[in-house]
Length: 179
Picture 1 (tube, rainbow, N blue to C red):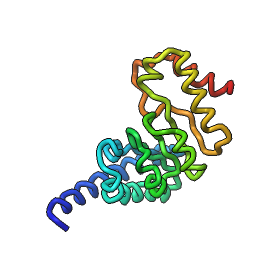
Picture 2: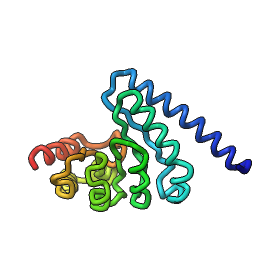
Picture 3: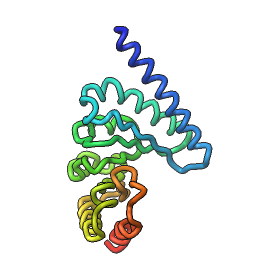
């Protein structure tokens, strides 16, 4: 192992320790499930090869800790995760919260009820800045893609901006309830 690889490994071990500590604290609150965001592991930040080498082994460990606590585990990675979806399945996560940049049709076809798909309406462009009609259309499109899926949770593709109009959130919920 080179000096650079040793530094990378040390940093990833440290971060994994912090993350698993956070997972344990979430579990202590009585949460039914726990989650973690690994934003910098997306293909817009690192290559799929780097993901497999540097992120995947640590993400597996985090999922194992959650499962050892009797909790379901959800993994979020920002950006277009199309190039690493197959590897994300190997993490052991029970659910994948996928960003709006990820192709929902591709994800549906690949995940095929192996893990729960969570997402992936654009939180900024649609939910925060779009009209209620745009929210209704995008929500309907996503519901149509996952029609008949056993493991789907409608959600934003990432955190909602604090400026998201309540009427847009209500429209997403109403569209789902009335579909």
